[in-house]
Image 1 (spheres, protein in one colour):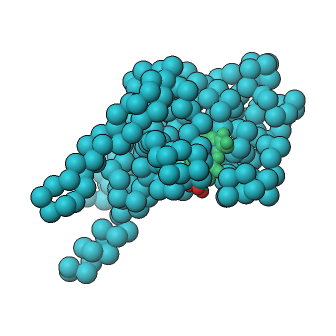
Image 2 (cartoon, rainbow, N blue to C red):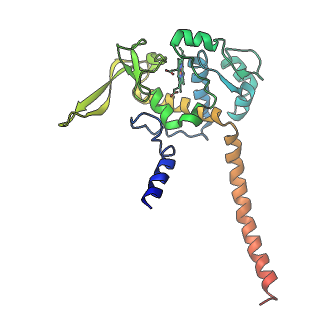
Image 3 (cartoon, rainbow, N blue to C red):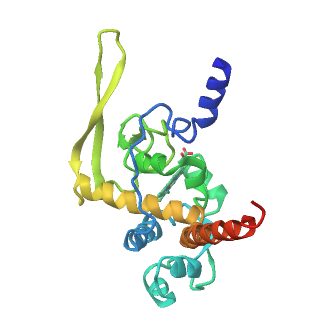
Length: 242
Ligand code: HEC
């Protein structure tokens, strides 16, 4: 029995968000995929700040337009910097070799990163860069120690440092972040922006989920109505048998 419980806990660990993050408590991303405005803001951040190093090569611009309630023209004029074809996928000019030469490791394609890591991890990652002069980019990350990515949004967030306290046994406890220099956004605004960006990455991880959720409501409704019909049919059929 004990073994069974342990096996279950191990199997459930990824769902509980314990798998990724190297022990750092993940923050709740609290994304809302039904919020179109949030997804649109996330798309804008992604196109402006991420799609230079990272591709999202399974995602097409016109599919995004359709799913997020934008017209092709809006996307063409405001969100397309790497191509002029609305039917194209989100590719980048940088080759993996160049990426590796610049950063030591090629920036991964982000199409399905949300499925690999989970929304809470991404949110904690994006808000978790902190000052660390010993690192090549002058920053480190609470959920990704020795990360090879620069803090590309430092102008928005500002630069923060981590505060740790040491208990009687000499163990370190994370106490919180402290801004050393302010960014153009307040911490609340930056959290909101990273929530939008996380939501967008969750969307591109599985674009069909938008349709599936819409469809799911109708399926449940159908089952509910069908249950009532089946119940009365059963009563009718069994009437003579009894
Ligand atoms: C200047 C280039 C550059 C830009 C711009 C950039 N990244 Fe990265 N990113 C990297 C590199 C390099 C890595 C690989 C880090 C490593 O493996 O050490 C990475 C890794 C990642 C990872 C993977 C983390 C993991 O746990 O595997 C995520 C998620 C990510 N970036 C998201 C973003 C988002 C979102 C943006 C836009 C705000 C962005 N990146 C902008 C270079 C960049």
